[in-house]
Image (cartoon, rainbow, N blue to C red; front, side, top):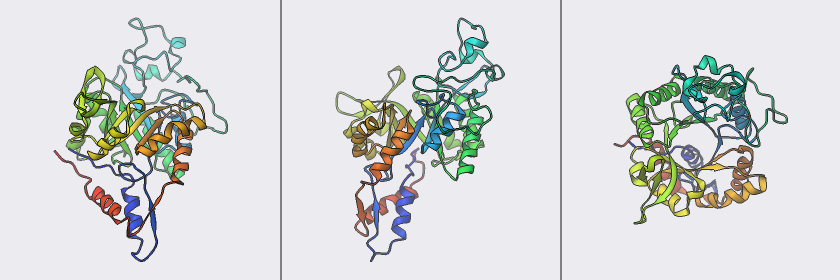
Length: 355
């Protein structure tokens, strides 16, 4: 199965089809796979400012201009999908103030969701409990949310603000088809069932292939991404290395994914070009600039190379970077730019699966 990436194709087609051949119309293009602006993806919301994987943090990330929100999911003891990165609770919650250790610690899998509802998600790193000028819409924005609650809150935000922020869902669990099935079904049930709204990813190769198969079985299109690090084999073949030493070449991954999400420090110009040659987009994680100046310095090279998505703890900084770069993108005259429109049209027509 193969999913062609979608972002930017619609915009390019609209611009081209509405311009007559005799006009000096122009369309700006990037070096990304589709020619569209790269995505700004709020990593666990906006954890540089507010608690991670929280409804309040996601809302702030959306207000800061994120195109997608990355959310981690796993199961509780009673099989409820929640938004949580760690398999244990100490780092991000006040669990030690509420409960005694269980089985020598505080594993998420040892608590029911009803028990977890008593906890508060705490800020980490540079984060805080509040952000200047921001008041969350939710009544209890820093509780541990179910995955369904997280999706409902994002939908409410989009409806209220006329936005279309999507969800990038990361499975934070080892190979488990039942959990993967629950993830996909929850996304479908909540209306996050198109590539514009939803991408699923995991470090586990089996989870990623399961996502692709489950989507095929459901007859639903979403983005599918393999997480890992960029890795060259001795013969120069480029691919993705992930947990347990699992490796897949870009060619292999292109058969059932449409994106590779890699540590930005392992991304090269050659890797992006090779991925694009396989119709794969490339996301980089995790951009954590200390200030706006450093954000420009970090991102500039990747923008030139054509990185397709910036996963960041600071979506406000990266939003400004991408928007500023947008002003510098060279326009492509029409009809001289018509080949780009043809490619875009083929991208739309090619939203299909290939076995």
